[in-house]
Amino acid sequence: MYGCPGCGAELKYDIKTGKLRCSRCGNKYDVQAIKKDKDAESSLYEINEYVCPSCGGRIYTADNTIAGFCSYCGASAILQQRTETIDAPKSIVPFKVEKRVCKTKFKNFAKKNMYVPDEYKTADGINEFRGIYLPYHSYDAEVAGVYDAYGSTETTKKKKKKIYTTKKYWKIHAPVHGYVKGITHDASGLFRDDLSEAVNDATDSKAVVDFRPGYLCGFYADMSDVPASEYENYAYVNSKEYINNQIKCKVGSNMYINKTEQEPQIKISCKEDILKPVWFMSYQNRNRVAYAVINGHTGKMNCDLPVDFKKFFGVSAIISAILFIILMCFQSVMFTAKTMIGKDNDRNSSSI
Image (cartoon, rainbow, N blue to C red; front, side, top):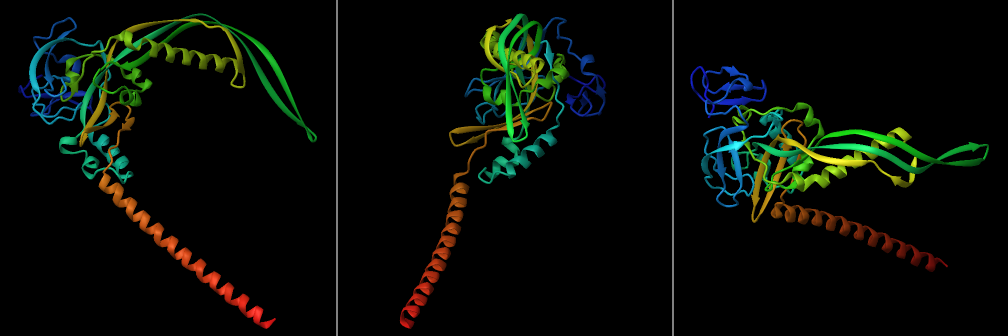
C-alpha cells in the first residue's frame, strides 16, 4: 500500500485528476513523487501478487485489498496473496475512462441484446468491472531497400454515345527507408488474444508515460509471460501492410499492382513492454466464461455475450405464435376469396 504523507491512509489513483488521492483526507499527490522506501532506484519494485487457486492466474496490485474473484476463469475464491519483487515494465498508459462511464457504456450496449441474461446486464456485484493493466510487447520495424513493381491504371471517358477506356502500364521504382513504430500485441498468456486485440488501439501510444507503481493504486495488473519472439511475425505482417498502404498512397489509389519484383527488407525488434488499461468483466454462464472488455484510455469496447436460453426459447415461441396467427388469418382470407370466386363462376354458368 502507498500511504498518504499527511495522514498515512491509503492512496488511490484518481482517473479524473490523474493524481494519487488520499481516501481519508482527500489530499492529492503527483504519481511520480510518491514511492515506497523499499522501491529501488532500478526497475525492481515490491508489489502484492495474487494467485488464483483454480487456474493459476496471477495479478498484481499496490494495494492490500483482498481479491475474492478471479477475472480470468470466473472462480469465486479468495486468491492467495504474497509479496513479490518484480521487474516492472518501462512504460504505462494510465486510465482515462472512469468506471461509471464504462458501466454506462456497457449497460446501453447490453440493453440492445434481448437474449442476454439480466444479471449480466447489471455489471454489478461479482460481475463488476475491474480495472486491470494488461502487458503488451511493443515492436519497432526498420525498413530499408527498394520497392520494384509493375502496375496499371485505367481511365474511362464518354464521348457522345461511346465509352472509351484507356489503359496505361507503369514500372514502379521507390526507395524505401524509415521506421514503423508502436506495433503492440498483448503479452499475457491467460488473456484471450481476440479480446485484447479487439480493444487494442494505436492511439494509446500517444499517452505512454514512464512507469511508476503509483499508477497501480486502486487497480490490478498482469505481467508479461509470453516471449516477445512469439509475436514478431505479427509485427512483421502489420508493418508490411502499413508500408504497402503508404506506397499505394504515393503512387495513387487507382494504381493496380500487377506484379511485385522486389520489396524492402523489414527488421523487427522488440522495444519494450507497456502496460495498457482495460476495464475487464467476466461472467460465468454454466461451464462457459463470457468476457466484456473496454479500453481504459479510448473507451473501445468488445463483448463476448452469453445467451439466456430461457429468454431465447421464450421469445422464439412468441414470435412463432405471432407468425402462425398471421399465416392462419392469411389462409382464411384466401379461402374466403376463393369461395366467393367459385360462387360467382356458378352464377355465371347458370345464366348461360
